[in-house]
Length: 272
View 1 (cartoon, rainbow, N blue to C red):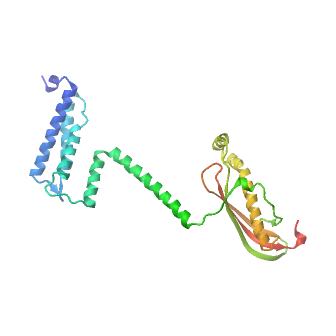
View 2 (cartoon, one colour; view 1 turned 30 degrees about the vertical axis):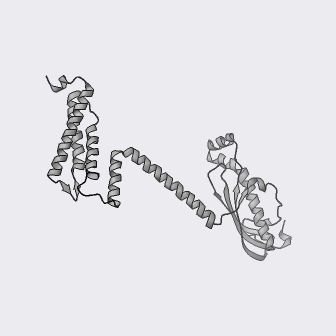
View 3 (cartoon, rainbow, N blue to C red; view 1 turned 90 degrees about the vertical axis):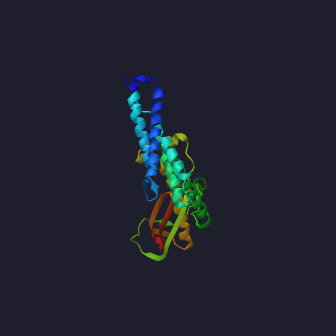
């Protein structure tokens, strides 16, 4: 009758396999210490003994039950070898960057998933803190563009300065130079159904849904540019260029609008 036939209880078989694995691991620890199996001050039992313990335990548990017991003895030997290496040392531990790094590597090897999650959380925390620090520094040292709510630009006095996208084929009496207007337009939040409609639409429809808000903002900024031209004594602006940049990720996104052109004075006879 084989040993596996005598051991009917699976839990008992697992316990015996774990004990045998632990004993085998401890024997390997003793041999490594007696034979001084050390490489650059690193005793091999820290690596070898848990592997031997797990192998022996798995071998016997397979023979007893045709199942593995989970290599529990390997964990036991891991704890024992690290206790020997870190606590019951022949020489007192000198805490420096190497010993601290080794300690954390030991913890990471014992609890890989837990430590990885903790490191990931710390990484996200560091990114968040750096972001907050950047926001504070930006507030202190960076002059940001003024933000204009779209609700505040519904009513404004329109200027009569002529806008031309390119230089006209008519005499220009005077060039006043490049003029520029820039502002962040803050749009109102949309209703939930409008947001859903926007998300589920294609690119062309998305552009159409944003067109009304963008048109209001564009006309406002063009009027702002016209006022700059009037201050210079110009009655027209040529070579107009308009640039739109999304300022955030809301719907519709607040937009940074930059408009520039050349302020000129045209003969009154050519003005419409």
